[in-house]
Image (cartoon, rainbow, N blue to C red; front, top):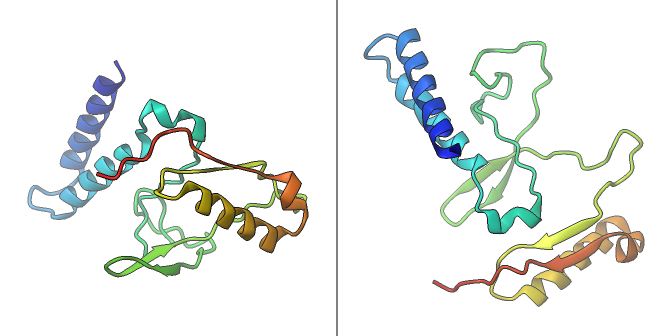
Length: 154
């Protein structure tokens, strides 16, 4: 069963952290928290399968972009600068990812609008954004549709 594999993997990583770090090292808890968060981010309810979402998960600290996923310094790696956006209670750091392929083509073919209270308005807004960014090609080259999963207001 998948959940048993996930729990066993988390236990193994926790034991590994335990054996590698001193008993009172506070970073143990941080590493276990990173493992739990990364695992939670990989889980998705089957009703969202149609989204075929990409998720990029990194354990490197946001203020230390020159670290690998284990938090080890990687001096030869070019740091990816952080951008920030406004959140409900503070700034949210993020990294921009290029969406063009090696030929500078834009491979996006479809956008599925997630659950929201006004899907038609969201669909029109996304369509406007795509046309604004990519011109008339986006009108016919990119399909924009709303998810079939019902939105719940609670």
